[in-house]
Image: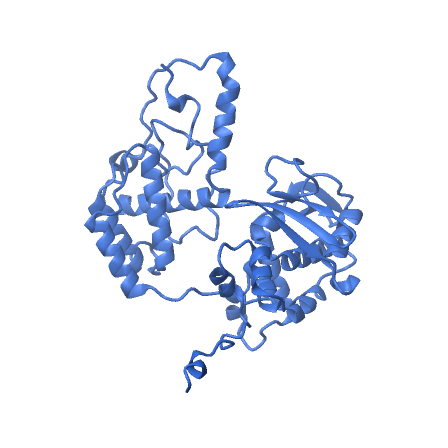
Length: 395
């Protein structure tokens, strides 16, 4: 009988401290993003005595028959489906979180495997108190919950489930929430006047300036996430890693997007002038960059005169928004350090939600939100007292 692990690997090229499942082995890049990588993580080569003590070294593979030739293609497709079960950002965050936990266990002489609820309880306590890493910076409640989700997922892939409802975990986590929970820190919205000022900081005579201009206007006009911006292709099925495509019409731009809950269609109308029109900006970029197939937004090579084949990463969108906002002097009343923290890729999305003077349901549809409440979180300038219950009650 064929073993399931023969064709469904869940880990392959993970960090040295990542667990390697005797059942599964998923292929992924294994690199932790800078945004999710905590400070003070120890990275060591696998195979050391400490790794062995923590149960982090891979067990020898059991002997098993090879797949018949006629099933090899199905095995390849199964690996693709496993990789598509979660986003690349989620996988990178989970790898980073496991590395963080394994390093903490190693420093304290604890075993990371098999799962121990008391060890997990102590770990999340260390994260909340700021003693989990050398920088002594406490993690937010959201970060701690994500780390716990990463551990739960990782243990499940090894066939050793973690019981998050155990009192050593659940009670400690409830106390952390009650003690440290805080309102979410929202990114500053890029409003229309801000966006226009940001566009003026870009060089219209360079390919990089034309590309960045199109990215900002399309991202704002569509209320797109940064991953959605860089995931766009010229046409359907242009690339395997594409997350959507475009169709340019007389009155605007149709964007087909693959999101967390399936496919959705976004309409981006033409602007009131060519200088601020997302469609004109995109057409100009595609024409001068000579792009007719594949990713829309790509790297600029060499001295800035050549366009490469590779798509940009979502982090480059965040850097662009931050850089342009600082150059344009947006929120000049704040210090430069504060402004750097306030702006990111989500600022474009929040800017559209805050600026569009239309019925709320249209904004909700454009952003792909399941509820109006989620849309309101993005609206920085909405009239919060439009419905005044105090006056309605007669006071």
